[in-house]
Image 1 (cartoon, rainbow, N blue to C red):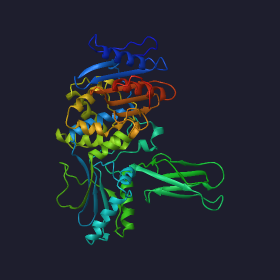
Image 2 (image 1 turned 120 degrees about the horizontal axis):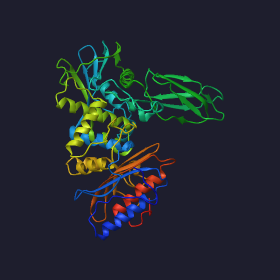
Image 3 (image 1 turned 90 degrees about the horizontal axis):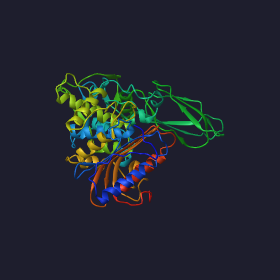
Image 4 (image 1 turned 180 degrees about the horizontal axis):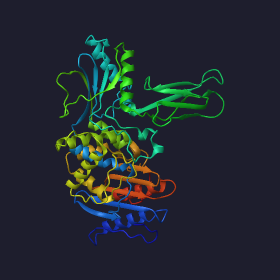
Length: 485
């Protein structure tokens, strides 16, 4: 259904004759009437959480592409299925000969933002594990380094992700063992001698990455990096006249990157693994660790930390790991044979929750957890209704606080600066798509759950973000919709 400029028809579910409500309706109508293109698909739904009533709806039941606001479905389902006290747990163990790591899908292992906040390097947990081994008198592992990734399936990249995205950090492969966001960070700086090969460093330290250095020092131009898809080769070319960090580039095998980075970190601490790296399932059918293994260490990440990276930084890998880990728990609880975290099971888990909430699932398609897939569709009513339902639950506070805060942090840090702390929401942007969904606190003390989705526009997203912000200002009680922010 198309939104037509000058003749926009908005369905408003309000009692008649209420001056304040009429004023809100008029202001919301005015905000939507400023759409710059007549063929833009717009979906809006606003729910008064206190009364549970939908106070405003425009194309609210039209399935649209939600971009990163799709993450809200994964976040709510995880909080409900796993519980707010859940923590990812990666286990270091030994069978007396081999060193063993059993993955749990933790996306935060070696995540630079989290480790920087803690004031430590991305290899800090590996170094702690080395310390445990050395304190136990183990300076050499006679056997292999075995990794168990069986809690997830082996589909690391979603089949509907666009091929052109796959080498970018935001489309990094999804594994049961993850390190450094499953990316390689390459930095170039010039040598003192003109035209000499540029100096290149990589993070994490690993023997896997093959750097092909065609970049020369000094001169005009900029360095360029090319990663042939599904290879371990990274080709650096061009000219380098100054320190130049590239954006993170994905690495095609997350478990192998984890294992080799651990191997390298142990060696630096004088712990040698004599064998090779190999994959093997050791988890028992019920998901427990075999009793013959000796557990040396457990590395945990709280669900709250993962939710913060998803809600405030829109980290796609974190959302995908969360969806798959939720899928594993959902399948295990329902007695499915050989449960593994997967995108299809994640979709089933989300749809089951939405149905449980009493929300019509017609047109709702859960392709992935991050919103990167353009196969995802949902309506504004489904999104706003889910947010309203979650707010009434005990876990609702954790979801609310995980979202970006207007004028304060995350992707809303520079938006709605005249309403600091009054809007908590998830943004979503991709070509032709702009979305904002979350909560607005009004001057009256009311709280609204809202979803605003625009699809099919041409050009920049700025005009659509402005309309989203204007709607939030109207709901907050700010009369001049264009003031501030």
